[in-house]
Length: 203
Ligand code: DGI
Ligand code: FE
Ligand code: FE
Image (tube, rainbow, N blue to C red; front, side):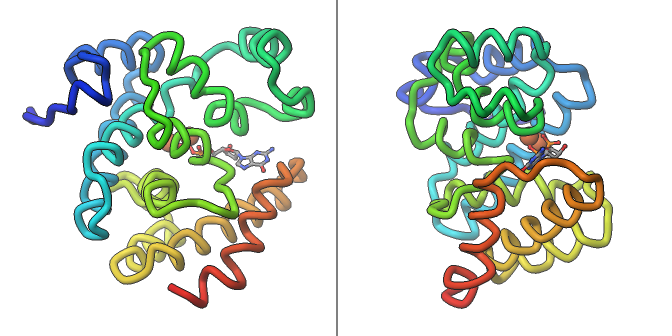
């Protein structure tokens, strides 16, 4: 058990156990456990980097809240709520961050812009990612159950450079997408470009 609690200013009064109930309503147990591990990893990275531990933990906990929402619900949400129609050319991999924040606002009631932005950016990244955004992006990839060599490499890099860990993850994502002949969401590529050049050299 853990005794983590979040400031009510971030949760609008919900306790962590109420947040966990929301997650369990939307996720199977494997995905729910992943969210708990990303929460813990994000809190540790935020401590290491002097970032906001509460926002990191809350964004880590909720980052995949919308991962298992049905495709038809997503398509209707994109069409009815003013999202870029180009999103209809992608899938839940891309939607659960960018559109996922809409469900988190509606169903959980979180409104903190920095938390929502980190969740929005957790899959595709963003060329202008903040340290908090990067913490969620990287925590998702290096949480303890991630056992691939590339994940271990990013975990090691994160001890000294969050920018290098971010770059490794982006290289892996692009390599994977191209290998699977999947469409690359333009922002994923723009993020890769940002981190392979300027941002990585200013680590
Ligand atoms: O939700 P997780 O599995 O924990 O991890 P994630 O949020 O990084 O999502 C990974 C998924 O997103 C994976 O199936 C690949 C997909 N994805 C990431 N970037 C892109 C993408 N899919 C497409 N088509 N295009 C992208 O640019
Ligand atoms: Fe995700
Ligand atoms: Fe995840």
